Length: 213
Image 1: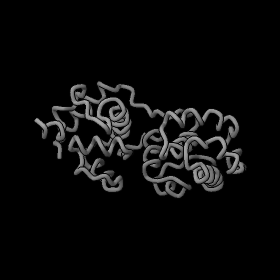
Image 2: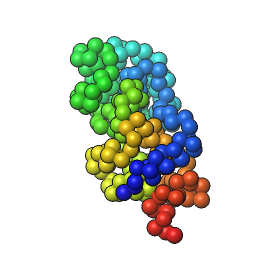
Image 3: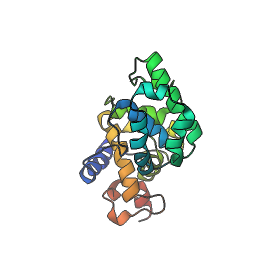
């Protein structure tokens, strides 16, 4: 595992490389981010961003979603895959947000996990992006892959096991943005198919790179 100084070196190098650590999903309202993240399961953010403008125009409020026919919602999100389950989750989540949370996206993990289709990955993203909650760790495929290569984790592929490992080593105030930068780095440099180490500013602290030297 890395020392605190090494972790900060990684964090700061990523900050320099990706100064704008923004979620790539496009949204205007808090619940729109919640719904967009649900749609992104087994789907690219690029595809979700193509689908949501028409979806949010057709159903412009939580009330509209809550009253919607899941079959109609499904037609708008068909290209995202698994659209039957996702459409039911969006309608069900809208109904619960209105009935249980006053139309607001809740902040607490236990409340977010009550919503249909919402797991810890989505809940952590909401807590980090909407509420700036320290220690929010989003363990998506890029984060799992790259933190394992860097040596920030024991290499586990299980998000439930990775989350506490990263929470233990990452500065809490940096964790949410760090995970966004993992996505950007995973798309541009440390890809699943190939590690483009010649382009990577993290090699001085990367266990995978060091092992090959």
